[in-house]
Amino acid sequence: MKTELEMNEYVPFIRKWVKQTVDMMSIEEIKSMAMESIHEEMEEILQEEGQRGVFNEMQAWNSDSLESIAKDYDLLLED
Image (tube, rainbow, N blue to C red; front, side):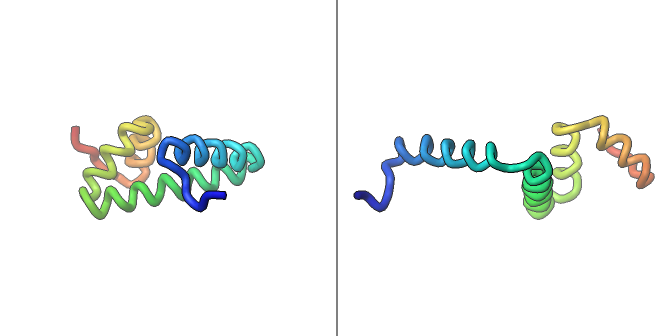
């Protein structure tokens, strides 16, 4: 038995594991993981590019929500 996979085996292996794992999760668990993952991604962008970079990423993901929430914070988003 092997202890590591070749790279051409690794990707399908991981994808199969992810699919089976997600298939067993509830919608709330999936939402929680997605929210945490997106938050971590935004934190990385903040560290690398600052708030402008985060706002650009948010714009790309969901401009309607960004514009609505920006109004709540009296935030003018540059074009």
